[in-house]
Image 1: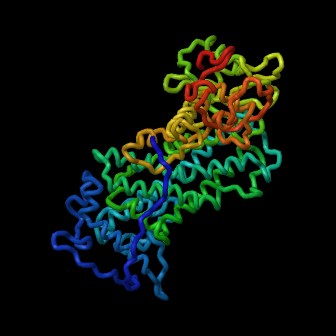
Image 2: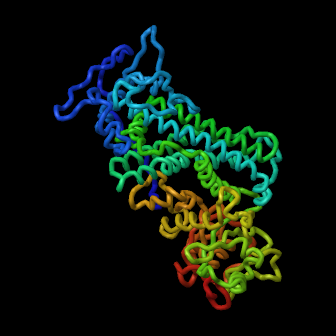
Image 3: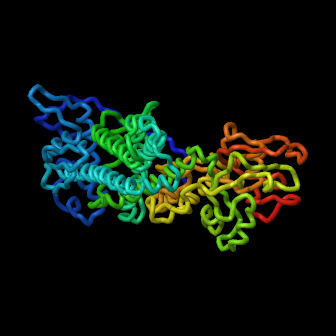
Length: 553
């Protein structure tokens, strides 16, 4: 799915001057064109109550768009008298349309707002459709909250196995533990994105199945709701999930620590629901309008499956968590993806000898995976104990002077079997990294995902069904050239080169790599880009041996 960089811009609403609204008498109806029945005059009959009719047709017949605008205007001017209770927005809307009392949607748990209404349960059919849309929106966030609890239980049940497989050390100082800070950062980054992804999956996929083609009106509404979900989600989450300088951690095991992180995640969800159902600013008002107008929520399913949502949450959580663990542990230097030209059916002996002596034989099966017919490797570079040179005739490490192999498989890969960790595989991570690299013009650090793009050109099916594999969802460096990797190790500096160990050699060392000019080096490694060999830029994965280039890997 193609995601361009997102710019959040929600349309503003012009508030018309009006008299303060009394709780005793709703405002008088504005003039209605003769050819159209006003929403107050509509009745519970015909297409309005026909469950087979398309949601936008029912909405239009009830005049619900006009009714929604009127209730927003009334809410902006709402005041209470000395003997009146103060309503929340959803309660006010229910009163305005003659609906049930206690319609308080800001409470995330099972409340009357979780239920649906018949047309006769409100004074006006438009109110029936609007309140049921509130109910669908509330149900989604209630199920999301439940899904967090289910995902938490699954993740806690295997976190000890995960920590052993990925060499996560136990907390040394639980009050300032880096592991919890890492988990909080991952959860914070995912909060807004997961709101958008699950909204897409639960609501938009149903809308797509409901109509032969999504209208531009609905498409625009959905993009507005997703933009709000991402950015307001992050704004709310910063008070709950961003680790402070002295972040308090849960004392005890990693499992308990993960539970503490998910408790913060759930607290964020509670606060988010309170925010969206109390529109005290234009952006939140626009969000509700975009989520409800033209019957959009009517296309959402009546039953939203928290179990299925929890599985999708895990598929979003684990790839980011795994990549973060790889990139922040002391024992890693600069984890990256190596793309080769080797076909997936390459014999084991051929495969091993091609990277020898850069990657030991035992690491080949652990580190490799197949994607789009080619072998990829998830590997790291060693920062010491390796003798490398860019002198000709060979860049191969001196196996008599080196203590270690220059490349090594990342920890935990052998346990990514498609069953554990939410079902995440090595191929899932490679797919996201590689497609992000492609979208960035075959460069690293050149693509930012747009989680609100639901345009026909945006590869919508991938985002709906496999968002964890979408381009750039996982951010790692991608290399396709051993010479570039060696050049980065010998001449580069992770602190100065953001794409290390895949940075262009023209950036690493602007002058020509003189065969006589360089000494051997033992160096560390960070992140990514790539496109060149010294002799032939933009060629994929050439290895270099006696002379210039060996068989491409």
